[in-house]
Length: 589
Image (cartoon, rainbow, N blue to C red; front, side):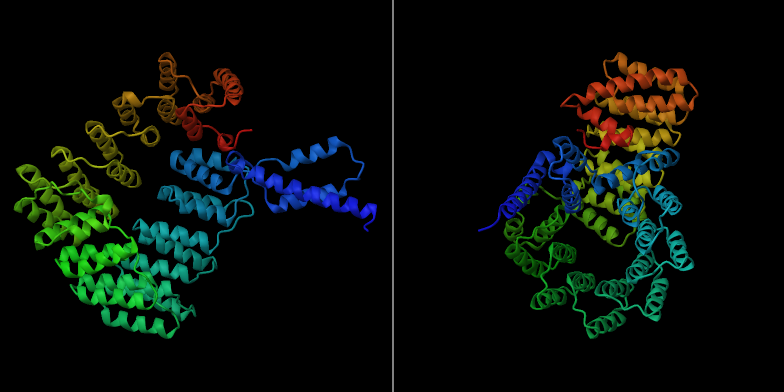
């Protein structure tokens, strides 16, 4: 029979275990999950502290321990999102001040994840260099490779090469991933010989390619019409013990389909299934698109049957291309619609004239050839004659491809065609144009696109409107920012007013900022903590310290009253997230 001391010890262990389980269950409830989940390490620290307390410790000491353990943490992903927001919405000078005041320790993971959120390229580079000077921080191959990818994706090859050379000069480890990124971007932007040189350098330095590296280099060779050399690399990959993955097979299928060898491409699909690799949605979409453009309905049917069996669907633009190809071939579209039940009624009532079909086919052909100048001239001609009505998915595809290839002139021409011909486009098309204009610093185009959005009655949205007003204002285009602000009176709220106010204050134009603030309050729009924060910072920079103290007191009073409220207006919350300090993202008690 166990002794009394042994029984007390057993009961004590069970109580602690029960307390631990209840604590985790409480934290995992939806209400508390985001704001208070503790790690096992914290629990271990608590348990060790409890063991150190004498059995006769007072209740107040234990309650003090509970209070310390229950301190809330901010998730790393929230920190990364907040830092990314700073880089996107603030000028660099303002961003530096906010970054330096953040109570976090800068490490490689945090910096790398921030860069992977794709902030504006210039800000990303400034942030990359700023981080290098932070105490205790040192860039590694991960942060360097991500920065290299950012320049490569933007087509800044000289900058990408500079980062690569900097890695060598500073003795940063260069791994297979870095080399693979280099050869991919060099080839993508036309430097085939540079891509070959990187491949040879990688092997000469003793790095063994992975299946991803082999696949990337095979695509480089095929894109540059080197099928024999690609076959040799494929054989080398097999000899090295690597099995082709889905992307490897897709690269081969795409090359064969581009060459008009649809049956051979279908054979590859069968072989990859025999090897235990199932074609995914991307592979099937590529095959259907190539077959539709090549007019091979027979192979298309085989791919559609596979998609039906595996519950895969087509992207909307590719569905329309396949539908048109089937109609031209005089075949039934029953299987196509069965595979894509979400698009069952798409195109049933469309009547495509012969002229429209020819113009559409010509646009697709020119798009495939990346002949953007010819596409622009074609749209200009169609706009003058006004007899051809191209559909929304085609225009959307043209705009997205042109923006991806940094040809915004052709994208805007297609966009204007849609406006003049009353072709309804999705909001995503407008945001694509705006995003490209921001990255290219073409701020005049932003105003034009926004005016067309207003004309087409497309909702801009408070968040996007705030970003545009702030971006234009901080780049010296205050008149354009004010024009956009006034063009959407229905979307004027505390967040948009604060964005325009911040633009004025960033330029030291307090004499325009104060009247704007007064106008907002006269219209019955109450200032948020973020609004007052912007006003206070502007007054401090202007040296008007007495006025600043008045508004600082108002901000404190407002924060006390808001803290006790359970519900906060969405626009007020957005305003605080964009313009208030770091504490705005911390979970409230």
